[in-house]
Image 1 (tube, rainbow, N blue to C red):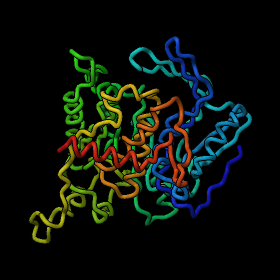
Image 2: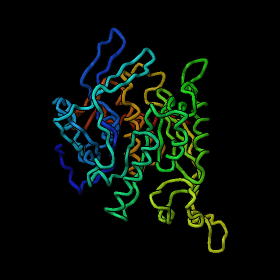
Image 3: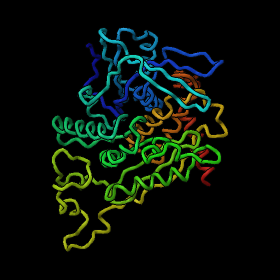
Image 4: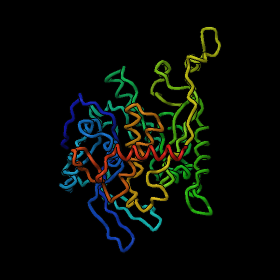
Length: 404
């Protein structure tokens, strides 16, 4: 296997461990199928981060591409045009990971692999990618825990003093089941963001239709809110966020309040190999609560900041009134998470990061495949003929007007 090299000194804001998949997409008649479409959760999440990263900032966006013997030259050209820190690994002895996608009249997607997949793990990370400020993970709950602990362990070996990165976890749909709910709650303390879509969240709780209004068949915002409340209450003493992607309804942000993660608290002693876990039998309870008490044993009210939490909806860029603008929803959720992740990595708050994510998703779903990269008459970067910052500004104004 041959690899393109990325400079070890290159600063990386975003790295995904999602895969590139070459898609074929089959629609209902009379729409014809399309083939050799650049896709996969890794590709779309990289797109979401790249949209907000014109050159030279594009070099802070990283992803991993495994090229088989059948890799189309047109896709290579498309990838190179983004000017990202893309790690390309060529292996002529295998086929590129490919997938079949089929849509029904309700835009529900069926998917299956048509060639063997090559899953990515922490060993695929070169020194520069290993020290990314944020990681997008698309995997099962138990694999999420393994990836987070392995990445942190490798980083600590190389540079013990480096700050912890952000972990944004996208659960895989097939393992959003009641039997995986306990594993899901075990994984939550390891990540900063957990982001299922509305049906995946409901499936964890036992009923994929739980998130739908039985009268209208549309997404029930109340059901989404109740499901988030259940998951948030499962993990006290820790502040993390659920970001639920709900299609034309937008996204729901739910973050539990409590003790904020301060550097001084993070450096307290913890059991080996449990960098973000919950309570365990061998945990030092005195160390856990030491930061909450002053020298006299009284609660230290001013020194320890308390996170008040978040509960809010942000509308989609293309809402129910703009549904006709959604040409192909494939990759919208992945694109959202790329935009969200890179915003958080660059110091934005959760609400603003979700706005970046919504705008990124809008570019992913307004055509089949990837949006077109170009320039306007002033030489400024555009996607589908639109400046990303311009769409973001318009969206923020729309949200402010709606929220009053």
